[in-house]
Amino acid sequence: MSLESIYYISQVIAATALIVSLLFVGVQLKQNTQQSKQANLIAHAESLREMVQGPEYWHPLFSQPGFAEDFRFCMNRYSEASALMKTRFHGFMFALWLQIDSMHRMQKRGLFDDDLSFRYIGAWKAMISTPGGAGWWSDVSPLNNPSFEAAMQEASARMEREGIKISDAFDIFPFLKEEPGEFDTIVGKGEAVRQAPAKDGVSSPE
Image (cartoon, rainbow, N blue to C red; front, side, top):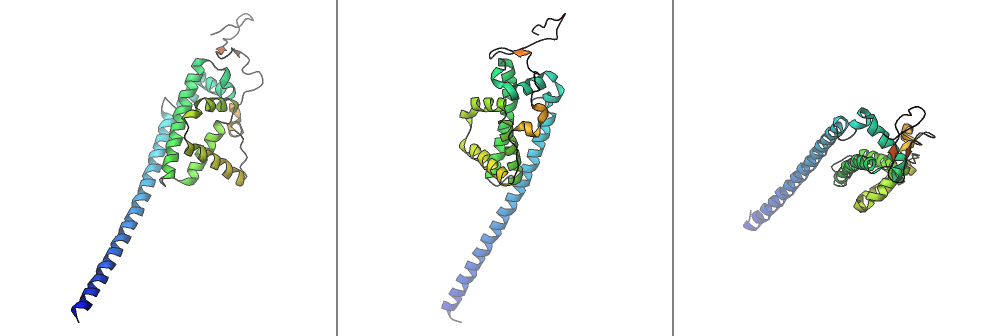
């Protein structure tokens, strides 16, 4: 065998080794991506658990009747809410929005399940489509990013394609919608006042 033949054979072996190495790296990257995706799903599930149990998120809704009332009022009549009611509502909604936006950013990088992302964004779209939710969203919309806005539009289009008919959160949670006359005791132009139970037929602010 000539030296030239040995040279070409060595080049072929080197090239083959390089291709095998690249394939190995590709497989490792894919495995690492899958592991990262699973880790993020676990972390997200844990954060949702903390949201349910933590005092700063969902917990006040079912542990503090006053906050639940404020939340329902703002979901229906945000523009009529007092400054305090708006502050509490904003703190809850903004924290939830950051959570969903963070999930969306992971999904864009392939680190979060597409279907789960669609469901969360669809639910968020429903929340900000109620009369009050829409009012709040209008106030904070300058903080929104084009990617998240596009994701909401995509979610709406997918819901239409799949025949999912949800106009707002009231379709999912009808108990959030105000009953006729329910909020008549909350009055005021921009500074709502909750009325205390009537005493001798006369109601007074709390």
